[in-house]
Length: 317
Image (tube, rainbow, N blue to C red; front, side, top):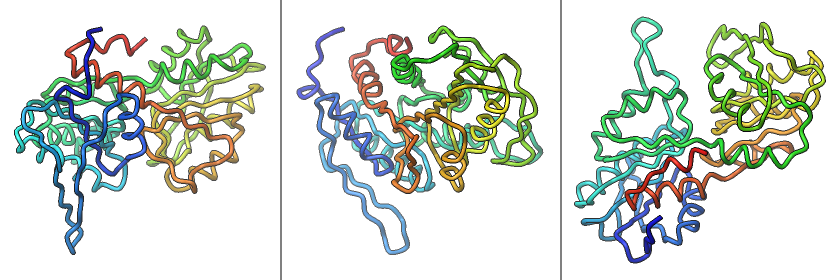
């Protein structure tokens, strides 16, 4: 890799307010201070954004996950617009968690495809590139009309799980949508594979119908891209335990942990739940078996490689 002096280069890293702790860790790994930004609100709640450093001709990276509340999206768009209008040479939207991704196709009459709309908004606001981790569906990369670097949290999780003494490990996909992800983990961890046949009678409500694969007397690792209300993981863990599974672990990149998630997950037969810090987790969402792993170093490397016009493919290993 070419030697890039980050402090003397034209690199500029900006953080929104959605996840400042992650942005600070990214900047620390890069040895690069965060740009000063002023963010205020008008009396009616409208956001006012101003970048307080020179942007002209610089390579700007704006870190802002689009997790709830929805105004985090508006803040990202305003920061992109401000950087573009200040004559930045290139602007990259670093969106660790890409919200509104679950509506990625028209599977019912008269519904929006919000994942495409979000991509259009980010592009039209001024982003020249986008960088994210574990899209809800891989095809979302194609919704953008700009280059997208789609990173995976798998290297972080694999390194962590390899440090555990697991017995006859089986990787469990909680639904068909996560089957490809689960197979990838099974290959990396030299494990077998199982999949859950589930039904979703209504949004955020799941019912496990069957488990396809051998889980009796085996340690199980449930893998998914996100946990919202915890219904899927909780039902899956109970089904695995009823079939004689030993220790049950779960890993999920994005921890939304909405509504009853804490209660469901803390009462589920999970040995441990490991998530990443793409979304900030408040104290009232945490419980004793929850482990938060950081993706700051992964994102910092991706920013460094992008700034130096180098390949990021080594981060996928």
